[in-house]
Length: 255
Ligand SMILES: Nc1ncnc2c1ncn2[C@@H]1O[C@H](COP(=O)(O)OP(=O)(O)OP(=O)(O)O)[C@@H](O)[C@H]1O
Image 1 (cartoon, rainbow, N blue to C red):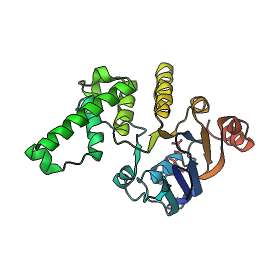
Image 2: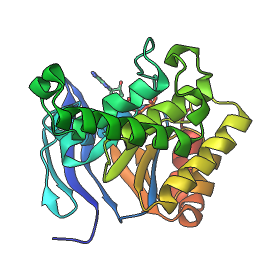
Image 3: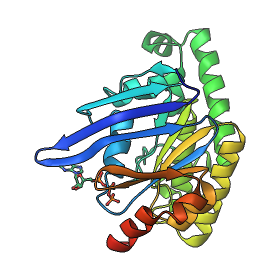
Image 4: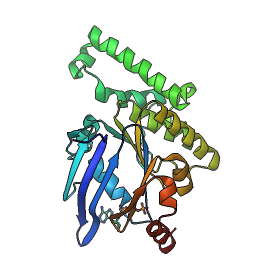
């Protein structure tokens, strides 16, 4: 057993003839923001999808908060305590912002379908507390005033915030964000950075993939670098910035 919140090692993943991940691991201390970077095609998304149960690895050892977890399916991973967002926003566009967060919260709700149908008092009470918590989370991410707005009518930056609020609604031990700054302008990126710092201040642990290396350097406690499906470096941003293998990977790659 280790003190890591997330301790993953020995992950291999092959797609047909392509070895997308070779013996990749990551170790995350509780309360840290950890970044996963690397040139295009390095295997970041594949690794992320393995961690969150979207892809089945060929091998690997997975431990969350000292307990083995099986990344066999996304719902199993969510139950284990990892919540994620997606590179392409996946909201319920026709539902309100509040309803989107309430859906996330229902992962943790106790009342089953029968409770919801027959409107038992316990179910009604739980619904009210889910609603209140959802509003709190919208306030926390800075879009509380848009609770009643249909999700698809929110600005791009606010939709991203909503996704984060929905992920937080599951009370995750680890928040996994897939390119949260993709498509954002400079102002939105700054606001996202502030939000992530706030999430960290709440004691949450965050793993993120992000192409904006400058943003990552200023935000992350630790960074893991992949290239051609292998981990080539791990360290604090100041170490990563001057690591010859990392510099070579970025200069030689598409970035
Ligand atoms: N579902 C799949 N089937 C076959 N090959 C895949 C699949 N997903 C990814 N790959 C391949 O695996 C390799 C790693 O891709 P991956 O998307 O994980 O890299 P990445 O670091 O996330 O890249 P990017 O920064 O461009 O998103 C690439 O060569 C890619 O073509």
